[in-house]
Image (cartoon, rainbow, N blue to C red; front, side):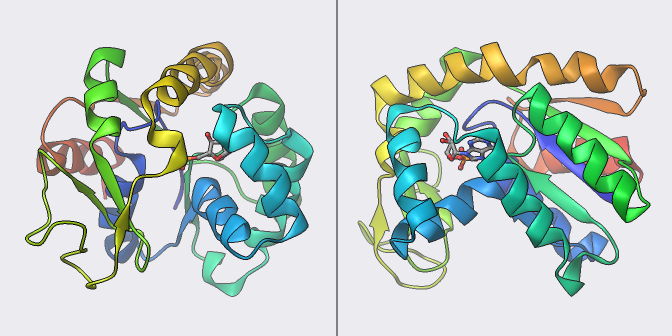
Length: 214
Ligand code: AMP
């Protein structure tokens, strides 16, 4: 099954994707995670991506599309994928169409996790990401048992540079300007499933399960 998750930063795309991978037997492909890994490894692409990420801007389409195309070649994608954070522009959506046509496959569902901006600022400024397993705690909604330490793997928690308030406001603007037009783009193919992302993690997951029938 081929799924795209669309939603503003902090809508819970990553969290929901992680809850779906085992059930569906497909990998989560998070372009944000891939860029963060490249930044950590100080690769040339990582350095370029970091400049954009710190400003709340998008990494150039050509860089992202090449990276995703390469990722699809890995054997774990044979049964499909959950794309988390890609595509984010119309150019990327068109490029994805071409890649999928080349692979002889197509999208099954575009799941849109809808959350108003006001909710998101509180959610994102409180997020603490694990350096080890990328699990995300929240200082108010999902606090770790021990301050600064991940409950899942015991590694150190940190606040992502792009989870600072000024950057979040810019990321939301970027989402409204560049990514939300994709909802109309995919609307034509009748594959958009709108989900209320203000509900609890469990309820959002249950709504997604119902919407995609799996
Ligand atoms: P995320 O973790 O998905 O919120 O992504 C964090 C940052 O990585 C974004 O704010 C962008 O700077 C960059 N990024 C991730 N995915 C993309 C994409 N599909 N296109 C352009 N930039 C991206």
